[in-house]
Length: 83
Image (cartoon, rainbow, N blue to C red; front, top):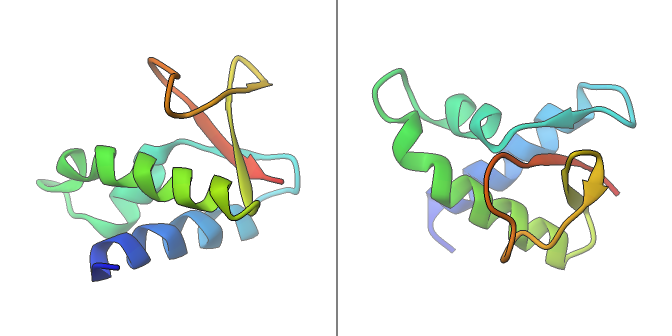
């Protein structure tokens, strides 16, 4: 797994660990944590892919409008929370 993928997964888990158990984050939060002011937007798709891997491992779930969704078919903004 490329370093950027590992860093994004770690950022998602770290950001969630610093929030309340039911709190959510946006994939952009992880992208911003790993990237810089100029590069974070390029990390949005990799951040969503990192979230998908964490979903597959049962570590997080992805929601839209407060309901769990399949990230592969979700369109638009999503949120990530601990499972």
